[in-house]
Length: 119
Image 1 (cartoon, helix red, strand yellow):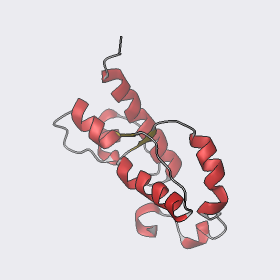
Image 2 (spheres, one colour; image 1 turned 135 degrees about the horizontal axis):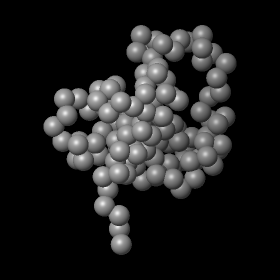
Image 3 (cartoon, rainbow, N blue to C red; image 1 turned 90 degrees about the vertical axis):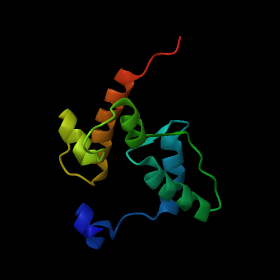
């Protein structure tokens, strides 16, 4: 993980465990759609943590990988780094939560620009 993200054990040593923040996370998310790049990966971790606590966590999801493939077929890469480079979306520190979330939000804006509004 350290090699991929640059996040070391020392950096998270004082971080709270999931059970300590599960309530505030659920409140923060509310009924929102869970948007992520490769959503099943991130959503799976969160869903499994709630299961360990004996709770359900269900939200509608939007995967920017799947949706970008649909609206922008034929691109050389659908990785977050590849898509942000292709579309000129900033990605300062890849595999860090805030930077990846901001880049994913940029992809979501592209997706929303392609969607046909419901009448």
